[in-house]
Image (cartoon, rainbow, N blue to C red; front, side, top):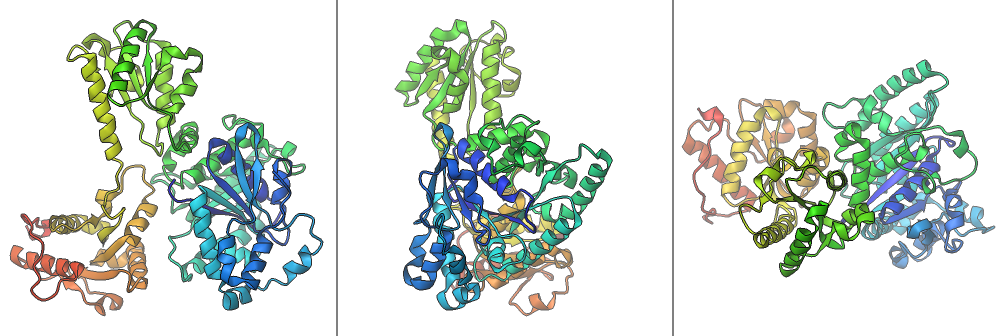
Length: 611
């Protein structure tokens, strides 16, 4: 990850396992290799550090309360305290995470000092909002995930944690009406407060976490509650749920069942249990950890194949591979594999040969970025099949592109490719030499590295974002193509959003990263909640983003559109008239004055409505 994300864990009432879920999620993520910071913002009832007491490098000498006091007494330097009071948590097997405790451990003055904190005065007199923004930026630079433990109930500090601080709000609740009613009310308040913040924020994503749920003794009653909770939580799942999925399917993946053994004390089962054993609580914790690590994306895979989804999140934590290529081969082809290894080295590609470390194949597969498999006509090799299966499973939706590249010794050997690799293009040694194969694979790897560049030379930004209703897709795509032919970079979802993408996040990033938002205003556009939301967001960014409505069809523009300087395509009945409107729009986008010429363009694409 280039930029971390902040996740607040909130509960309306205590005793629902919120801190337990946060602490164990942090441990799972840290053991996978993510950089994790935990922040105990439950200042009135701090307890997060109890989970880590046995693993602290030293007792916390200061924490969040001291940071807040510094923001009040020395506001001019408070912004530099974002990480000054963190404490290291050393976990088994070399894993580690960092903790900002609520305050100094064992301090008798803690309660009286906490009572002196006036949140309203902090914001109004000491500009604490700006200080907190600086803390957020520093936390996200240093960590992949920042997990914040929020105060329960309705409090000022809890409001800060649920609205200003997070990118994602995980709210824990149990199966009773007071928990559900209370937590949903707070989440709704947080969403509204978020919209009113004077800071540039994407829409707050929310994850309902059904905790300590035990349907075993009363199965029928448990199923009734599942159905009711799925219905009530559906609006909070909608922003990241894959199309066609049911709320019940997602709710099942964000449920932590009740295990009596873990209800005593502050314990970390994530240190002793397997994340792949469905009979243990860490199985559910790992599902939540993977969902957060993957930023609530590719959720369809979580529903269809939970283990692959979790393995992909674990693999994505790896930032650097030690070696370019793992060469998988049968026993008979060990010598050929060694020759290929030498040829790779001559072409600047590092590699490991499977036969050199037969007892550690799985470990070495994980440490190599790509897989090259040498297959002959001698029939399927079970060990090689295992290499391929493991590599492909670990590579599913991984953050880093990983390639599987077969090399076959003959045409007959193509039929012996492992089933998972039969759809891949193979290099046939009947058509070229091993040296040519090595050069071709090296060239492919270099090409793949170049393909990872962002869409835009401006680091992912766009000249134009097109906001439109689905009914106007054909018309909008024609406009997008014409603007593109004038040299403009255009974000239109049909081009930019790919299968498996988290489409609300992609749309939001495109909208906020564009210099100009063009709203294709039609009757269908006026009826769409989403396009109206996009229009409002762009309107709020006046001075930072240009907003240009274009009118199409027989629409009567709503007042908030009619008051703006729009481009009217409604009476463009001929190609010449249509081209004139496109050019007028392009001049507005490019801020061209007077007779400044437009960039040269090729032929014009006409929308279907003109035929």
